[in-house]
Amino acid sequence: MTDTTVPPTPLQSSPILQGERIAFTGTLASMTHRQAMDLVERHGGQASQHVSHQTTLLVVGEEGWPLEADGRISVKLDQARQLHDKGEPVRIVSESEWLTLLNVEPQERRQQQLYTPAMLSQLLNISVHEIRRWERAGLIRPAKKVFRLSYFDFQEVTGARRLYDLAQSGVKLDELVTGLERLRTILPNVDRPLAQLEVLVRGSHLVYRDAAGLVEPTTGQRVFDFDPPSPSPDQPATISIHAPDSPTEAGEGNSLNRPEWTAADWFREGCRLAEENEVDAAIEAFRLALIDDPLNPAHHFHLGDVLYRQGHPDAAIERFYMTVELDHNFLEAWTQLGCLLDETGQIRGALEAFRVALDLHADYPDAHYHLAELLERTDRKEEAAEHWRCYLKFDQRGPWAEVARQRLDSFNS
Image (cartoon, rainbow, N blue to C red; front, side, top):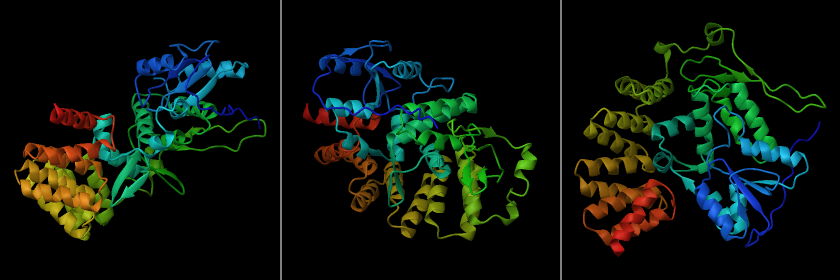
């Protein structure tokens, strides 16, 4: 089999880019394209908006995969690949590799920077409910969990959002597959987008994989699946997409019978209804889950969430209290409880809730942020400043980070 992968060229750290002509493709996670081009000029290189025979380095941005609106790889990336195949001395590197080359931001630090669902919601304008839905479906995977709280790698989520947006916009799946396969040959270290695409094969409907293929959780229906054939010796592996002959045939024998649903079935249904903004029905589903499993803290937590969305903060507070009584280490329940107690004027209880969260997990960014806001509003600015600074240790670029910087600047002025 012919190896079409572009061999990675080792980068040597250097304070200058003398003799380099550099272009950028995709959205950069660390800065704007204009800022990146200025950085190139300051390091002795030449920045270009286009790829040409003079281009020596193409930097691929890490905020989402570099795919065009039709699902194909970016034009610049395609041009650079063609020039490379013709023997031109153009290198294709990731944004992280480029930053490491410039010694602007150590790669180790970027790899360690993780985000909670609440932080991502602010940064990417995606609801927390959507982020949780994607996690349950396997579209995104947490880099780590601390007391039920998921932390995510930024690129994992931005890549998923890019694929999700493309699928929703009507891009044909075979175009996406082709684009991602080409991306993998150009950037050999990229292995997640094809796996993410597996759960997006029905556009906006998330599915999961079991031993027999892909399934839609709420109906049990078999859906489109990837079926990679064995490659021939002289042909690289490809991926084709298959659809069932009919929805009835695909779902036969798989649909759940509601009278026989378990607490887990009702919980999944409640999550689905909440995501579809059918709040009243979601409340009923979570209550039915609690009938069979009354001591499950996650059921109480999600019921509290939809009760709040329905306009019943006091009832939601009771559910969050129940959640932490059943699981004292449920971090998100403590912050939700703190926010609701603050909203309803119960300041002492809110302060205690946020501090319990930080006692459990001293590096919990959300708790630092909310506690800082509350302390500032109660004229305890020195204490608030401490928590604003703590928050900025974990987030340098989102809207919450900007708020923290503004508040700290106002204290010093």
